[in-house]
Image (cartoon, rainbow, N blue to C red; front, side):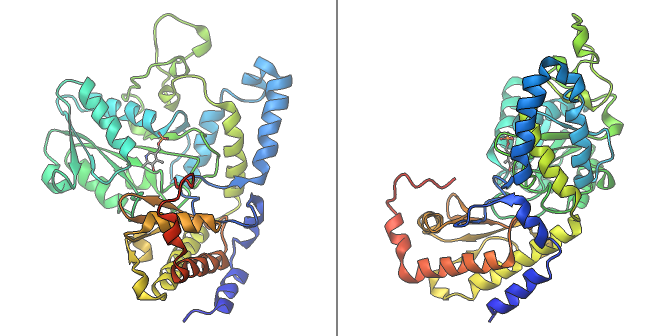
Length: 411
Ligand SMILES: *Cc1c(COP(=O)(O)O)cnc(C)c1O
């Protein structure tokens, strides 16, 4: 039995304890969905207001230079590189993951002439699969295989494979891939390795350069707390930048956008992978968040994330086994990202009941209750309290009233 006193002791020893107060969080909420939409850094409101009122309101178009709007996508990219093991000059903050994947996968196909096979996972985030299916429709000869549905990676990795796209941490189960081992296997087959870091960046240590990744994408509104609709990022290893070509050859990827030349000439660096005007106001949220990230150690974040996940699993499994929860995530913390999922046939109604009580997680079909553990915004006692609410809902059966609930949205 774990006692509340032990949990409070963990909070007293938490090197990240001070960081929690830098985020806005309603009193009545225990937020276990920071893996889907990160919480608001308090400084973001001020920074965004400053961009709107000073840089836009007063600076007007002069702010492209005076407020560094033009260089910001690469400057912020370098800062994300510090969290993902990428040396400067390889990451741009731009567009959405979906659009960035289109750009990178097309570039990869062109870099592997004669190879027309793309591989991803059946369990990948649907948009990643959809983008590959779109390329398959428009690009003659391209075919897409899904690990799971069509076989194992070993089965599928033939000498026609141009690129393999894998999400580092599975969005449903939280299972984490061994990125180094998979990158080596894919590259040994002559293909390019593209990583989706949506559930990795800000969740666990990533070493893009060290593992020799070819390309990567990730988002800033999940574990990086940049706010709804904040842009994604993309990584192209420096060794590929002279040959990789962006199919969305917009003016922001041009070597001199403000020369307004007739013919497209790509920038010779990562800027080439931008397309159009960046979302300047959203950068305010990302800047405020990265300021916080600058002050924390990723090792502390990872240690607390694993401990919170373990605590949650232990507490849920100590409940009455008759409640019927089955762990869907790896039990070993080092094989998980920063979330824990449980299966339950009535998962949707139970999640609605939790949200009704202020414990916000989410649900993924067919039966997965998903709980994100974001060390910068949660205490160990929050984990304890969340499970206490879950216990109460199960004991009293209040989730039954939520089977037919309407207007109670679970994302
Ligand atoms: C959240 C997520 C996305 C979202 O993509 P956008 O195009 O930025 O909305 C894509 N892929 C994965 C794996 C995700 O988790």
